[in-house]
Length: 353
Ligand code: NAP
Image (cartoon, rainbow, N blue to C red; front, side, top):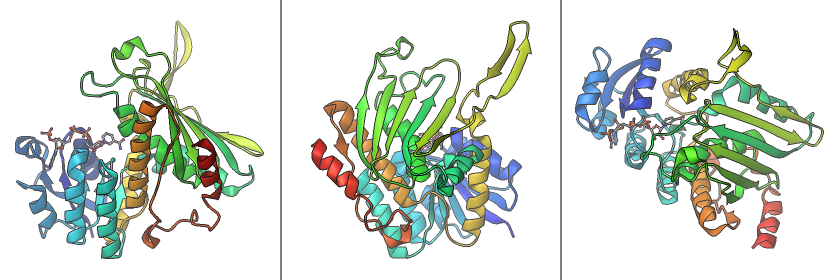
């Protein structure tokens, strides 16, 4: 039995996910699409799919069993709440929502419903290299993770559309989420430093260095450079008590020519994470077919939103900004929830303030 899904938002990533759902993956049909730009939705609708005038109509359609939200962030809350109201599983591209209050409303609605319905599009958790790295950490042989060095470099970003806030409230969310997941920890505080500006980004605040203070006391440093010219370069290394573990370098290809031998870097996130996007949907299709969700949750989307907010405060204040989370609802339980968790960070925060 195939899962019948509707896709809301048929821009860049919406079209890529429609391609994935129709041409790459099995067990799924795209039966409906919607975009605020109806002409765009009609243009990319797969054969036989219905084009709905509104997201609400698509979500409520009897033919739609599960929903994929690829609209822009500010529209996510309303669309998620609508999906939860009718009990339909929903894959939501990051960000979950754009404010902490909106994240709380979505979380409250899902908790009241009583079953997970929302999966957030943090695709790095489905990447084979990150999964091997996490398996090594979880194995415990290297001891406790102490530091994580995360590098997030983009060749370029669209001039005028990508603003100085976006490294912190759009790009950082991936590093924040993967840090929480790899270290099985929460972010307790955020610092931001702005080094010499890259002339390639003109007025853009680029690069930035972010320091995530984890609740356990582990530290994560994140380099975000969004005009690095040479490609999309994602790196990560965790220093533990008895060794280190890192992502392998993932060249797009090895080139041999008259200049010698060199490794080509992936052009962009679509190329680097193509298998991760496929895998996140494979796992979503299985869970959604069972009327639920797996992987990154509303709680994880909420956490990323708080980190982004703290980072924006930190870049202005130059100080360590605290991340204050509500108590984790049982629906999103994790092994993080041990009684001593967070004590260390509370002490650190007190001494830092
Ligand atoms: P995009 O090209 O601008 O596409 C968004 C589409 O949604 C546009 O067609 C837009 O129409 C439409 N839209 C906006 N509001 C809507 C609403 N209320 N109802 C229905 N459609 C609506 O943006 P994108 O790059 O595809 O990004 C979409 C989402 O995916 C964003 O949340 C982004 O952060 C996320 N994303 C995630 C990753 C990842 O690595 N996981 C990568 C890229 C993007 P108009 O153009 O007319 O406004």
